Image (cartoon, rainbow, N blue to C red; front, top):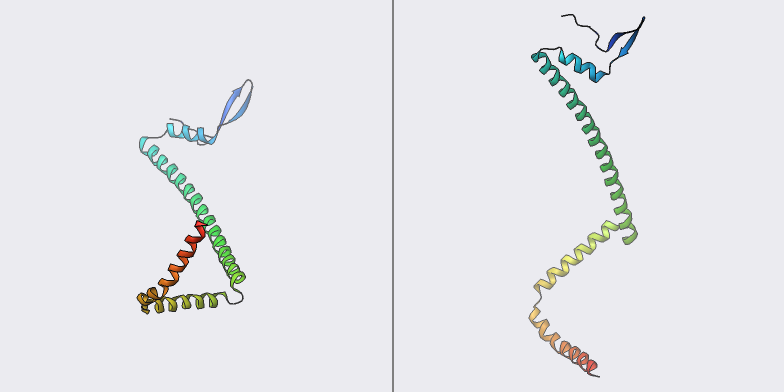
Length: 141
């Protein structure tokens, strides 16, 4: 069998002159595939699939890098925004003031837990009765 070594270029008789016909790479691969044995053909298919997978992997890696860059940018921006927002609301030392408020809430909760609420309810009952009575009489009129 006589095979051309370069399958991408073939000469064609065009009358008295010879013209060069260019075959697209996809068709060249198809022609080469037709002339191969089954073992060589499966090796070529595997090699081509491997190259496709490498290209897909490169594309995915570049997408992951882009997502990581965007994530860093967004995270850095939101940290700066949160810090600026806290400074606007709480002044120069926002984290100190926030910690002090948390500590005050904790201490108040501990104190309320140890207070005898039964005595407070007994003391507050006359006040609640008078408030309810005044609101009910205001609705009647």
